[in-house]
Amino acid sequence: MHTHDISSWSHDHAFGQERVRAGERRSKVVIALTAVMMVAEIAAGVAFGSMALLADGLHMASHAVAIGITVVAYVYARRHAFDARYSFGTGKVNALAGFGSAVLLVCFAALMAWESSVRLVHPVAIAFDQAIVVAVLGLAVNAVSAVVLGHGHDHGEAHDDDDDDDHDHGHDHEHAHSQDHHHDHNLRAAYLHVIADALTSLLAIFALVAGKFLGLDWLDPLMGIAGAILVARWSWGLLRDTSRVLLDRQAPGAMREQVRAAIEGNGGDARLADLHLWSIGPGIYAAALAVVASAPETPDAYRRRLPAGLGLVHVTIEVQHCPHHGPAASEPV
Image (cartoon, rainbow, N blue to C red; front, side):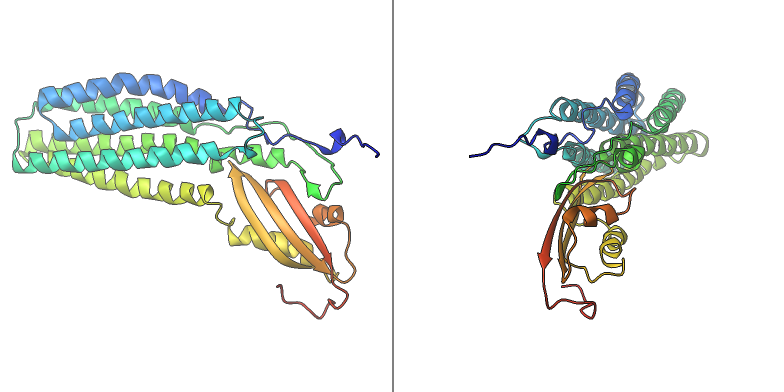
């Protein structure tokens, strides 16, 4: 029996997840800022009787916990990036953390709405001057946090893999890394937590100023409800997007059409009988293709047709010879 050295055909499935991402570093800075302001706002809301301020502090508490989840997810994904038990690496830990953050945010939105409703029915006296000062400080912290989380992109070096295997692992890391900021649901969750915090801070300031100068005390709990609705609406969007990743939903139609056009649009008779294209991490995708042709090329030839810049890091191509399949058979199976 002959043995063959297949080391040159083997690879890991880290796909860049072992790197320390900029989002991890930025999240740690924001946690420190948020924890201090969270305590101040909750204490001030209770002491000064402001429901809007208390709601903002509670939301900031959810934000602190959510960003804590963000950091844990980054660290876990990085430390287990080469763990062979994960078929496509640890990229989906990112989406899982974003999903968990969104669920947590829904719970805090419900708490905010409940407490605000109680205050509408049973109002309490508000120390407007002190509450306004704390709310302005909270807005300032949120603004700084948004700048920290939203600045820059997580770049990495390109990694070229010229494997000629039909089980392709051509790593389009340069594209994937440049798209991390846009596809990183973990970082997106942290960033939008901060943005939602800033908006609820603005609502709290508006309500407190209106209460102080116009006597509209009822605006304070009403803004707490408005903030809860805003947070719930945002969290639904994140739940939707992260669940799509976790459930291996097909990539956007435009992306699938690019792959189909690349395989079928080169003057040959190749047709895609099957196409699966799904996200396995921030900005990176896996694909499984079944190609049918009367004069088939090698899997590697079809792989080279795939457009660069799609973030395809794990592509499996199955080629089937069909002697009765020709150019006239233009409809995909």
